[in-house]
Image (tube, rainbow, N blue to C red; front, top):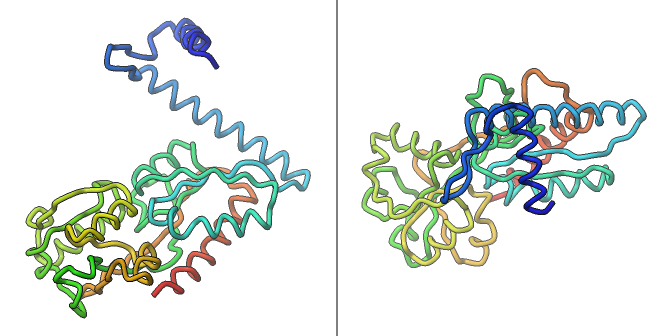
Length: 277
């Protein structure tokens, strides 16, 4: 659509509801309170429309159409692509659509019905969602081969306070798990020497490889870098073991394709996680 056409459609909506849906300023455009309500209902209407289409197709024996999946960055980048490829090979008419964000954002999208299901680190704290554990995932310290930690067989939380720390952003499942780990060890997270917060595992690994500091990351995310000797991983003492989970709405129709994908993904995630050193 052209910009004038979009503007015309917005004006029609605002005329229909008799109120402004957007606040327009020189710095950009934001939703008004009324706009936020309209957006919420529009997303739910579209989700119900997609459910209707899926149900009717399934009655005719078809397994086709979109599958809206959310995943935290670690799962989306290092585990889910292979699983999606294998599942797509079984159901060629399926069209997976993947939304990648941190665990909190993924759960918010599922709650508002714009996603069918999601994969997150840890358990869900959203009362409207069901959470099922798929597999275990160990987090380890990573650093450059030249870093002082590189020769250690294991490392404690207290020993890490003297080193520069590169961490994930607030809202990340990894960040939540590591913060709790340090708290249980008697090391307040704000006492650590945090030099940078990043929203991407790839960016985090790249900075760690320069020798800037250490990070704590899933072992599934550094298989290639460890094999190529670009990074070194050191187990924590005690270990950090978390769970990777699939989440979906409690009260909602679940199509045959969603149910099948959840079962398939749980089996394959467990197998892939077990293969990683």
